[in-house]
Length: 309
Image (cartoon, rainbow, N blue to C red; front, side, top):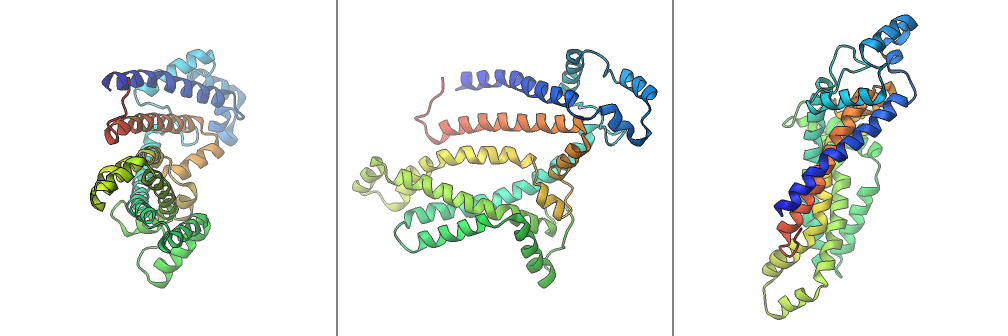
């Protein structure tokens, strides 16, 4: 196992360098001159050439990439083109924390409600409970966020005055309720369907029938045999969901005025703020690579029969 983990960790730098190089090339040869973006309406060709020379943008592309990679490995992603004088790390850091808190709470809501319900209705197949809950989950999953947010605001803000209508106050502030429910409700429906399908697959296996024939009680069969094996495909989804908490949610953050990284990412794309785009891309790549590794390790913990070489 440790040899497998070590070999996977050794591949991470190569993957990150590949992602960084592709993003760097697209940023350099994409539409829009970085210097022109920085100077805006005050663009002057003579001054632009001097600034380009000072920033090293007149050097060969490989030399530029090498310098960027060296600085990025130390946590320095350069200076924002849109917000002059401010580092990319300083801009992204607080917004990543905001999006991570919001996404974590919404994911927690999806897991705590969706997984138990999916496990329950799989055991209730053939009764009215199964199609009833599945129908409700599919209905909620199909409702767009643009409808969910106004509906929750109408109930929780205008009619009952339970929560503020917009803004952000942190993890333990009431203003997190509306955005967390907005992002968590579709996740509940998704978790129900995935957990139900996975549990039904396990319930149809021969070793479950053998366990029942031996006279094992429902709790033992469900906990020792059904739940652990049905969680194997769920682990992959949960791992990548955890990695995705850094991505934020553009629509939710924009409508509710949340200063997260999702909204900031889209703004950076429209502003052609390439250093910010590259930093967010690299951070996302690291998160998904580590999530993939965590998922593989979790497989062997859940099912001892799985071994890596």
